[in-house]
Amino acid sequence: MHKDAFNSLSLDEKADLVFQKDSFVDTRVYYGQTISLYLVNGFYVEVWYLPNENRIVDITLPTSNQLSLYKTPLNLNSLL
Image (tube, rainbow, N blue to C red; front, side, top):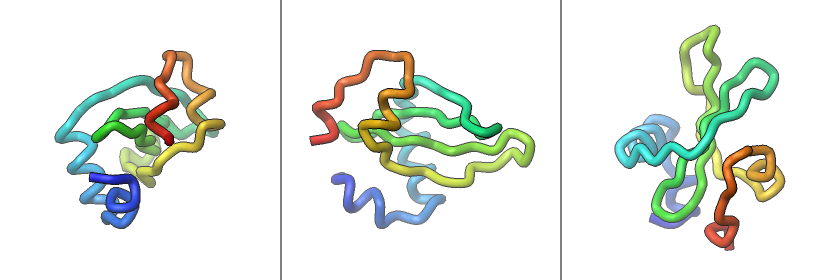
């Protein structure tokens, strides 16, 4: 699956794909949201989670600037 096809999926479909592959990379916190980074089909995906509401609010493709916020060394070639 390519990034464009991933972006066209619903939130539930994205979650199914991400958690089916389960390739967790790292996590960070931003304004009370837990953002988990996964590697799916050769590209990175962020899962935005609100712990106080126990729900996923978004699943997005991060920019290179967002990827730089993670402590784990990342292969940015997957963004090309």
